[in-house]
Length: 111
Image 1 (cartoon, helix red, strand yellow):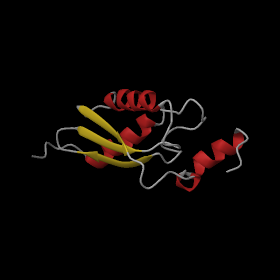
Image 2: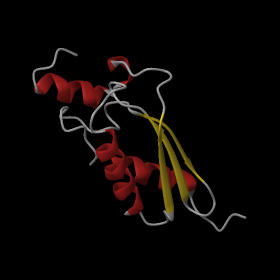
Image 3: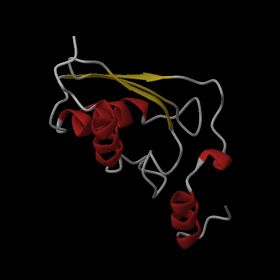
């Protein structure tokens, strides 16, 4: 049942909120890194996020997951957040936004 929740607007706000989430070893947020693969919002404000990491054995996976959940829960209209990590397709630098690539170059990375 649709309670008038503007899902597209909410998705934009969620992506903005996720821009505070960073891998401590990489100076770019998870959105601009291209780590968020899928974002779904249902009529009750339940958010399901599929994301990946730059490497499968990333030691800060739990930290990034909890940071993402906390950031998204601060968005008005969100009632629950689930973050799942997926490994297919694998992340590559080509998934980064132009802004993310620019940030990486500013920090001396050759992207």
